[in-house]
Structures are given as C-alpha cells and as structure tokens.
Image 1 (cartoon, rainbow, N blue to C red):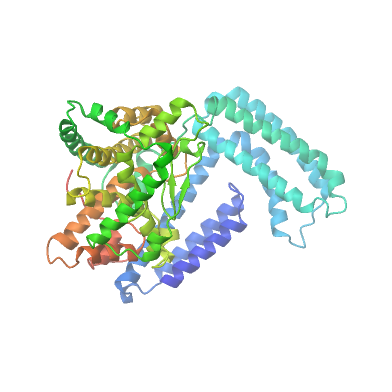
Image 2: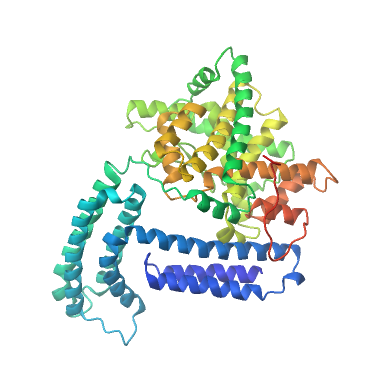
Length: 546
C-alpha cells in the first residue's frame, strides 16, 4: 500500500503539473479518468491479507480518491457561475496554450492564425467588460473573486505561450506582438472591472468567502471522518466555550476584576517592548521544549530543538496572519516602525506576553515543529494525500490542554487568561466558520463574534476571518483545532488513562507522531487495533451524544 500511495501521489503531481490550466475540460477529463481508474484498481487489492497499518492506508487512500472526485465536481459547478463572462474567451486561449504544451508534430503552430485568434478574443473580452458593467449585481463577491483569479491565470498562460515562441519562431513577433499586447491590456482591464464592480471597494480590505452550505459541510465531515452533524458541532463549541468562560471568570476574580473582559484588557497591555521581544520569544520556545523533556512527555530529538529559526511576518502578511506561525520555523508577528500607531498597538496587544506563552509551544515543541520534524522522517508518504487539520492543528491545541490539566505550567492568573483566550478563540472558530458555511452569518458578523465573545483586537479578528474564508484553507480547517484536540484527548483517555492502559504517556505521543497525519478516527483504529473493513464508515462519537 505504501508504494501505491507514493505512486499515486507522484502521478497526480505529474498530471496537475502538465495539465495546469485551471478550468480546462482537458484537465478535468484527465483528472476524472485518473481518480476513477485508481478507485477501480484499489477495489481489487487484497484487503483481508493486509496488516493493520496497510488496512489504514487502504481506507485513507479510498477516502482521498472519493473526496478528490467530489471536489472536482464542485470545482466544475463553481466554474459555471462565472462562465457567462469568462468562457467565451477562455476556450480559445486554452486551445492555443494546450497546443504549445503538447508540442505534437501534427499540430502546426501558425503565427498568422494565432494573431487573428488573439484579435478576435480581444473583442470578446471587450464584450465581457460590458457584460460585467451591466450585470454585476447578478454575481456574488465570491464568484467575482474566483473570476478575477481565473482571468489573471489566463493572462499568465497567454504570456507564457507567447514568450515560448517570441524571438525563436521566424514570423511570430511580426504577426503576434500587436494583438498579444492588446489582449493583455484587455484582460487586465476586465480583471480590474471585476474587482471594482463585483467584489467592490478595495478588495485587499474586503473579506470574501464562499459558503458551501449544509450538504457541502456533510460531505467535508464525512471525508474528515467526523460522525456529527454541523448543528451538533455548534453545540459542542458552545459547551466548551461555557467551560472557558467559567474558568476565565475565576482567573479574573483572582486579579481583582469583576468582569473577565476587563481582566483580558489588563493582560493585553502586558506586552514585550521591541528591544527584548525576540529574546523573550526564544525563551518561550526553550521553555516549552524543556517542559516536555523534564516530565518525559514526548521524545524530542536534539536537532528538532537545536535547528529552530525565528523569522518575522511582514506587516502586509500580518493582515491575514496576525499571530505567530509555526512549522519548520517560528514566524513572529510584531509591529514594524513604519506601521500606523493604532495598528502597532493592536498588534502588540494581540501578541502580549501571556498570549504568546501559549502560542510558542503550540507552534514549536511539542506542537507543529516537532510534529513536522518527526513526520518528515516517519511515514512521510502519508502527508501529501492525507493531510487534515484535525490531526495537524488538533495535535498542537491538544498540548495546550495537556499543559493546562497538569496544573504546573499555567500557574499565574495572567497566564491562565492567556491560555483561555486561545481556547475560547478555537470554540468561536467552530461557531463562526460553520455558521458562515451554513449561510447563517456574514463575514462581518464573524469578525464581530471574535471581538465580542473572545475579546480580539479588531485588526486581529479581521485577519483571522480573512485567512479562514479566503479560500486558502478548506472549509473545516478552523473547526479542526478544537475538534481534533477533543478527539486526541478522548483517545488519550482510552489508550492511556483507562482500561488496560496499553500505552505510557510518552509512548502514546511518540506513536501518534510516527503514525503521521490522518483523520483521528483512523489513528484510533491503528493504535487500538480496531476491526476494519474496506467499506469503513466513521462511527466514533468522541464527545458522546450531544
């Protein structure tokens, strides 16, 4: 199974690299054919003869292929939404670009014919500009955003094709240079028109998202092996938030505040000054690694800790990543000298000492840095196809829960408030992301939820929502933090704390890391040796009945 997964991963990469024109029927047909043929071949595999590890891989691969098929169909449906003002010129552009890609002897590339086609397409784009001006209210911001990206991609493909021949083909520049320049200008004008009248305003500031609806969420939950409905997950989020708010009130009272929001404001203003901020962050990173080593909670390879580097998140990127980012290195968000004064203060307050104390080990050790370090060295073939936020983000948040429950890490009231802020944040991430995709709340209301119920600075709340909804992350990514952590916490109870206690705590954590990324129910089946069949369906109600 491992060899099959590696081959499919590499083959898929080859197909996506060669058939790289998004929206092309050729690309769609080739991918559809690939997924269908691989599913058919997988059905002939000798499942019953496999080891538990191989059975898990079989189920993971089958799940991936079915999900890829569904996503391909969803992409096709989304293409249709902006087809009225894109497809008429996209089709001839794709035709010429694909001839250039194939370079087949029987496809004669004639510059004069191409020039005529480009000139005709230029006129078609002009009609699309008029269409957008007249019918802009018929298209959503999300459709406009996807259309603008598609137009930009088509410009890139036209230029790549022309650059391939320019200066090399004897008559290419004579015929093509002028219509090529005219088409490039027309496509640029159309992209700007779409951004101005469909997306609206400064689209760098506009928060754009696309709700996938109840049925879309059910498809995603099935792929992530979560046997709860969206409505049940919203109830789980509220239950966890209630616990957080209760603990927040206790910590606030210890600081002499009657209102936890006032205590949170006090903590936000305890930020590290510029001169010492980097060394402060390095100290937090060292603290997290030292803690898990001291208490023998997980194996920390020397190089995983030794080779940690710290970089900065540029001010522009802080608009979507207002806090620390982790993984191979720690990226820190801190205001630069040329930022507006109000923005500086919001960034400082959002990355204060006590918020940062919970963030540093989440991003580094034992969180994402350790996770990636081990994952690159143990079963790395699983990472590309089977990545899931329930494992990736769930692991890092799970450690926040472990440190909290031990009672000797978050000892001051300020540190407890810092930790609880993040846990409340993850609860409301479920609330706003599912609420948005169910069509119940807008992107702006998502921002308000983070400000009002968690206590975010408005700039950091906008960054969180922008990052969550702009299409760079799958729909369930934000829900994956808390839900994945709750899954791992329940698995810990089953594997370490109850029953036969088959694993010591350190072995449990090491086994998770070495298994590498997968839905947590599959991880549970692997570690606890649950019976599996090739038509596996998720049934583990890790939070009980809701």
